[in-house]
Length: 261
Image (cartoon, rainbow, N blue to C red; front, side):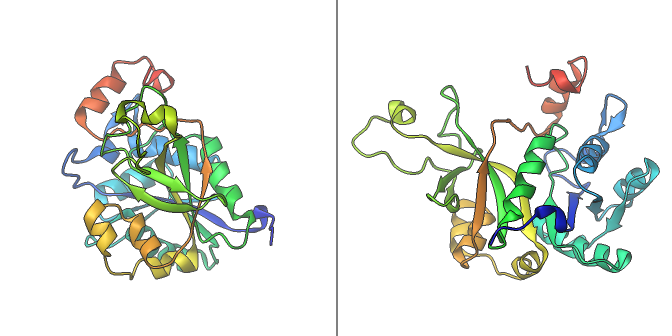
């Protein structure tokens, strides 16, 4: 059944923690006069009526409130942004006394997140069968499909994710690896997720699965438990500010729009 997604209540939630191993305090690093989380928040606010940062750190909470944003405090024991979003969604619904139909998990270290990408993921909920949604992008010819830090996605003919892997999948048999990308179209995963709220609540209590343990990819837990992940293609690249070197490169530019060219 096709639905008008404009009748659904969407909430953009930005999970943010201070204690990052690779880059402590990164949500608050200054980027052209604003903390990074503010860049993400303002972009999300262009798409979603309801936007909140979800954190376990008062410094982040205070920073968001100080620029006029919404924030909620969540547990410090969450192992993933998905779990943090699930708790935040419960808190927000109680605060607003309003039902949220779909939660969109927006990465707090991606100040380049595009409005078009968020609109695309919203549109996947025109279909009432969509439980979880995410985005994929074709690997460019000059990109390394063997990079384990860039997860690959195998997609069905009905645009649902069949599997995610850090290895190139599928294995192109009887072909030299150097020309695999000429033999097959490989897709990378773009880490923007959306969930029906009742599905998100179920996902938050699932135990870690064997596939997730093997690949260290949380979304495999959902597939292993029979949940369906709808995908849509994007042509827009996402760039995370995940390390001090990423920030240094960004700050060598004149403005946000110049990165990463």
